[in-house]
Image 1: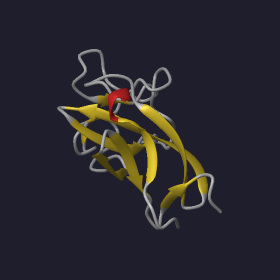
Image 2: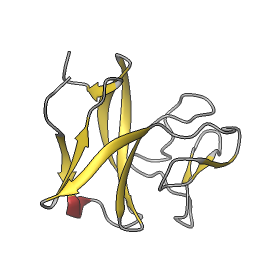
Image 3: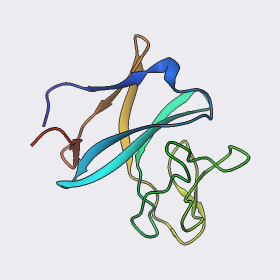
Image 4: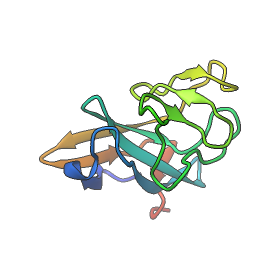
Length: 124
């Protein structure tokens, strides 16, 4: 696991309720993608994996929010999640929410802090 945070993108690249920044990770040593987006002024990040069935959720690359830009929605199953905490709002996800990743915004940049379970894809 790295000793330092991983630079994801410039803060300005994440527009309010806009397109997410996607990036590759290893989750329990399995290849996966993740995404970071800005919602209500906060940067949040999650694995790009629906809690209902583990499939990528974006309907176009980096597009995760519903038409009204209120919720994250799975393009495959229609499961709906709250953007700020990843909890399931409605759909087949039940009580399971999205897997949140630790991100911080500082000095005009967005950084991800890898964990024991989720680490950079370029590391082995």
